[in-house]
Length: 353
Image 1 (cartoon, rainbow, N blue to C red):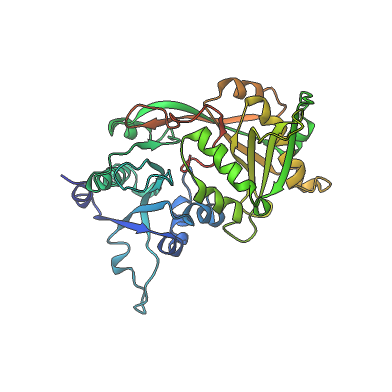
Image 2 (cartoon, helix red, strand yellow):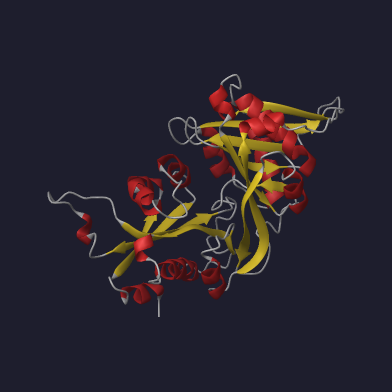
């Protein structure tokens, strides 16, 4: 029996709708914001949703309560945004997989309204998402870059297996400034504004592909170009300063703010573990006016992917906190970044990997 028919048995009845493409997704951004209110994703407001929904790599499956949103029209007969009982986002992770039958698909932002939980909404949504790939004859991989504690039992029942560990770290800008970094005269860090990289974009894309095993040019390009008013992005490259010929960068880190005054989100970050703190320090000194006391109080967050030693070292930084640790999962039991070279340090996003 299909997940759609399973959903139809619920009370009240639920219809699963598919929103495909930035235009239909952004048109319902207010509904996504409403859905996350009061959930573990409560911090997701308009700017964060806009970054997720603006890419061409996203499809959303949303559960709509029929009795709550009949025909989606108001008292004047005008079309209104959908009201969601839950959602799951499907992301096409690899730009190079365009044949439709070997695409790596990731899932994330599996959210159910608190009032609609314990009714099978999340299971119906994810089953429907997996069924979509079967109908398309897509034999590619199915992965969950980050799995929340709440959703893990459901993912296991659907056949997903743990294949990695993600650590969410947090501190303040001032904590990184006060951090005693080891002196490394052989490391040179150079910072650029995200929209001023020019030909350096290709270097970034290549480093990311080697680290993850995926081509993610389109999503990273969106991050660099900007996706909403007030968002900003800084990029730092790290390389050996002893090479007079100027070798290609061996590491890169991206930091962004989704809105003015918002948290500084680090990722993707690529390279040797010893590059991480120096690149983070360089990002902060170039992104912020540190003479402003308010900027020093801004939060810094990043998700470390499968680098346990680095996490332990970071916890020695004063005021550094580990907010949570959650597994990554896949249906085939293989690591999400199985084709990467091990240099992927900090993830871009829990859904995007």
